[in-house]
Image (cartoon, rainbow, N blue to C red; front, side, top):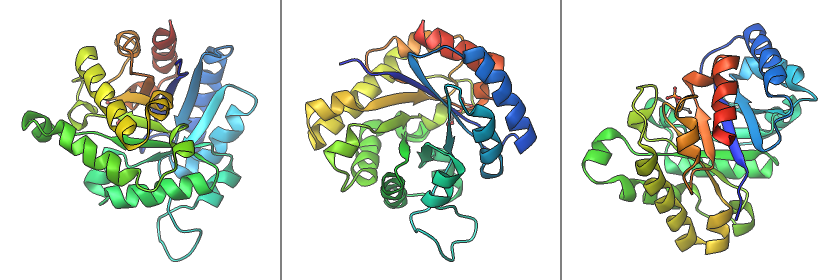
Length: 253
Ligand code: 13P
C-alpha cells in the first residue's frame, strides 16, 4: 500500500495576514512542481483568507487550527465548518496537544470537532500523543489507545480510510527533542495496529500517520523513510519558506 506523503505546517499563533501572504508567495514558488507530497499550511483564523488567496492555483493547500462542532450560535471565540469551507479551507487540525493542555480539549470534544469536520466536507488532521511523564511511566500505548478510541468513536470505516492522524509526542514539541526514527516508527506501527483492531487491516493501511515534534530539514528524510511514517506536522520549521521547502524536499527524496 503506498500512501502519499503529507507535510503540514502548523503556524500556531504566528503570522499576521500580510506576513502569511508573503510567506505563501515565497513558499509556492519554491515548491512548485512537487506532486508526490500533499503540502498544507495552517495559519491563524485572521490569516486564512489572505493565505487562501495567495495559494490559489498552486500546490499549497490551506488548513485551519480548529473548528467548532455546532453549525452556528453562541460560542464566543469559535469557528464553524461552513465559515472555514467558505473561506476556502480544505484541512482542519483537531485536538492539538496545546489545545488539550491549555484549552480543555478532550477526546470527547475532539470527536465532536471531527464529526463536524467530516460533515462540512473538510479533511481532518487529528492529533494524538503522550506527555513525557506518560512515556516515562510506560503509559504511551494506553494513552494512545484511549485517545484513538475516544477521538474516533462512531467514525465510519469509509471516513477512517481518508483520515490523517498526527502523532505528536508532547515532549518533542518545540523542544528540539525528536523521537528517534525507530522510536517514532514503533509508535506509528502501534497506532496502525489499534486502527486495525477497531476497523480492519485495509483501513489501517490506508490511514496516513504524520509525525510531529521538532521535525526539521535535517531529520525529515530519516523519519519519513520509516514504513509507517507518512509525513509530518511541523511547527517551528514551517515558519520560513526555505526551512519548510528543504524539509519537504528531504522528506520525499
Ligand atoms: P515543532 O515542530 O515546533 O516542534 O511543533 C510541532 C507541532 O506541534 C506541530 O503541530
